[in-house]
Image (tube, rainbow, N blue to C red; front, side):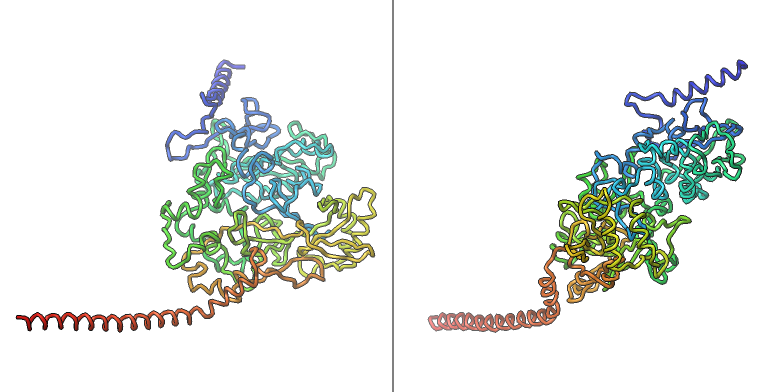
Length: 628
C-alpha cells in the first residue's frame, strides 16, 4: 500500500472521528444549529448498512454495489436514534402518550367482509395489528407504502419464518428524504413498489433521483446473502440490485443531496391527501387551495418540531401530551388571538359566549359545508392514494364519511371523519377478541367469496343466512374460545339458542371517529355567517343531518343515524330549541314594538311631570310678584 494512500485513509478516518466526536452534551454536528438560516450543503459519503467507517463507504465501482443506508449515512452528523423517537416513528413505543385519537390504519379484506381500525397506539376503538395476526413484518407489507420508515420497520422479527426473510430483504429504515428531499425527481411512490418486492433495504435509495433498483428479494431463497450474492439457480429470478446514475459521485466519491429544511406541502400530501367521492371530486382544478396555503403558509409553519421530531399536531389540549414548547401557540386560538404569522384576530360580534364553550374552532371553520347527508371521502393512508395500488373506484373500501359533528374528548363538538368497523371475533365475558386474518380467509372467505361486489372495490353483499353459516363454522373450531360474533353496521351479531341471527348494541361495534381540522374555511364561509339558522333550524344538518350506516349486510342497507346521536344531546330538546328560532323574528318585532310603546308611555309621563313642575314653578313666581 502506498504511503500517500495510507495518509489519505488516515485523514479520512480522522475526519470521521472528528465529526462523530460528541460534544460536552453528547450532541453531533448537525444536532444544534449555529444560528445561520442557510441550509448546509449536504455533499456526503454514502455508507451501506454494515457501518459508517471507511470500510463500508460506497464507491461507484464496488462489486456488489449496495444501496446506501440512511441510518449510517445521516448519523455522521445527526442523532438518528433521537430522530427515531419522533411522532411519525414512535407508534410502537408503549411509553409515548397516544394523544388525541387520529386516523388509524384500516385493514380491508373484501373476501372476509372485514374493515377494521388498527393502531399500535392505544386509541379507543382500535386494535393492535397482532390481534389480527399481523406481525411487524406483515404490517409493513400492508401499510409500509405510507410510512416514512423506522418504527415497526426496524424491529427484529420474532417469527422463525420471517427471520430469514428479514435477513434477505433488510429493514425499512427511516427515509429522511421522504420529507427533506427538495429534488423534484424524488419519487416516494417507488417505495411502495420496493416494499411489495420485499426490497426494504433498497427502498430509500429507489426513491432518490440518482438511484434505480431492479430485482426482487421476495424471489430469493432464505439463505441468500445480498452482501456476497451468488447468482440464483433459477435464471428467471432476478436478485435485487441498485444502480447509481452517472455523475452521481464527484471526484471525491461524494454524493450531493438537495436537502430542504422547510418541508414543502407537496411532501406532506403524499401521506396526507383527501379527495371527496363524487362525480368531480378527483378534478383538482375544480377545488380551491387551502386558505392557509393560499395565504403563503405551509404545513410546517404550524406543525413544527426540533431534532426529536416531536411534531406539533395542533389540537386544543395537546399541551398535556407534548413537551414541544410551541404547542400552546400553535393551535387555532394560539395563532388567531396573538396575530402570530399574520393571522387575523377574530371579533365574532354577536355570537354568544356559550358557542366557544361547546364548540371547537373547527366546528365552524373546517371541512365541507354540511349538507343533509354526509360526504364520502378517500384518504392516502386508507386508499393508497398516490401509488400504483390506489383504489380509484368511488365505491372502494373503506367507506369514510364526513363531516360528522360529534362530541370529542373534553366535551366540545368538532367535525370528524367516521367509518363503521366490520369484523369477526369471539365474545367472552363481554370482551371482544378478534380472529387472525388467515383463519378468517380459510373459513369466512370460502363462504363470502361466492358473492360478487356490485361495484369495484365495494362490499360483497352478504345475507343473514351466510352470516349464520360462518358463525357456525367458527363455533365448530377446536380452538374456539367464547361465542363467535360478527360486528357490522354498529351491531354485534350472534346466534341465539335456536340458531337464529340476533343483533345487539356493543361498544366494539361503535363507529370509529377521528377529528379533522382541514381544509380550513375562511370567516366568510364559516357556519353561522348567514344567520343562526345555519345550525339552529329544525332540519339543520349540524344536528339533523344523516350519517349512513355502512355495512355489507343486505338487511342493514339504507340505515342511517342522525348527527345529534353523536353529540350526546337530547334530540327532542334540540328540536324544540331550534323551533324557537322560527318565531325569533316575530319576537324581535314584538320586543322592539314593546320597547317603543314603553318609551312612548315614559315620554308621556315625563311630559306630564314636566307640566306639573312647570305649573308649580310658574305659580311660585306669580306669588312672589304679588308680594312685591
